[in-house]
Length: 71
Image (cartoon, rainbow, N blue to C red):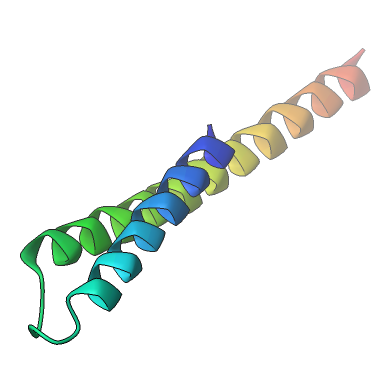
């Protein structure tokens, strides 16, 4: 899931930079700003999702180790 979110973030940021490049002479493009915002949000979501999974994996591994020691 983290890889999918990172891929979508890269795609959104890439499209935003292309839109900014094409509309450089105008000033700014609202659609490009929206794509940039979506890309940043997807990046943050991917990082939080990955961190949550790492914490969950650590806690489940430590609890299974603790269960083995009790036996």
